[in-house]
Image 1 (cartoon, protein in one colour):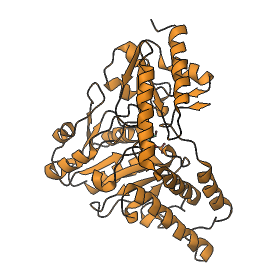
Image 2: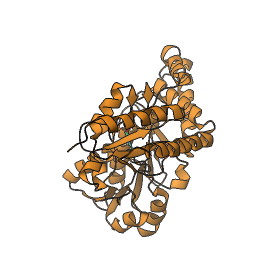
Image 3: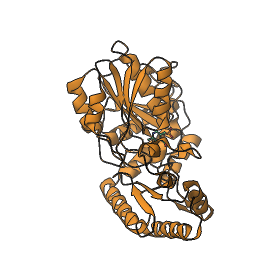
Image 4: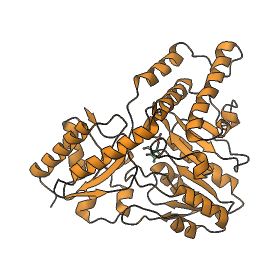
Length: 376
Ligand code: PLP
């Protein structure tokens, strides 16, 4: 199998599975138990939190484990709206957010919030000025993702944070960094966002673990789950110790020689673009994130391409894996001609992706182009 869908999910390295196996079978104590078998686990959870917090460049006390990126996004948005309930009921976000943000904002609209959805330009970019211009005195929250999952565009979150502090310092800033964490260089400090959502399974950790950074500007964060007092009383529920162990191990592995890994992925993406542009009717799309390459085989329906390559053991995606079968709201914002929009696919890479895998994928796409019927 050739797996070129790392933005959907990633393979779990053996060392991550081993770390989890040890916790599942030997270190299965409950971190809240009083005896050392439990208390030791509590210590280890704090060590694992430190590993993830170090990679994000934040104080471990500000990092809370969650079940996934979706949960982190949901929590951030509701906590921000709660904290700023005195300020107003206006939210600024983009029209290209992941559903975890988009659907949450749509739900808030039904509860009386007004949401401004900013549309990117034809290349998928959004400027800080565009965001800041939309901010009003009653804007409780700005939510702008750091890397777009379908296009790979990188959004100017640090610039938005700096501008917000001048324009409306009370407005809170959330960023969905699920596709950015350990894919582009940033820290909580360099970003300056109040909430940063992460997900484990995009970086070699298991599914079912995420994290949310909450800055100290959010004095009394609204709890997500009330109960036994875990996660500083903000996200109760017995810690998913094996998942957390896997998350920390994956972070540890990814951060080893990270700059080299990112440089290699950037070089691989440039190589892939070069090869793809030799196929007639290919239109390269998207931004600079090293692991996401969006393109259209103009005139050939994306679902057919994905199925054809899938039948040859080559895994790629037609837009976001969360929207299979439906037209993507992200691609729609690019206002491409119908035949170009219908042919958008996404290749996404991991540190272990090779040139040979790219070559095989490009060859399969060329054959698809040369042998399959285009849409009328
Ligand atoms: N945000 C972005 C940008 C994503 O790409 C994804 C997953 O595809 C999510 C959020 C949701 O993360 P999770 O699958 O951990 O809920």
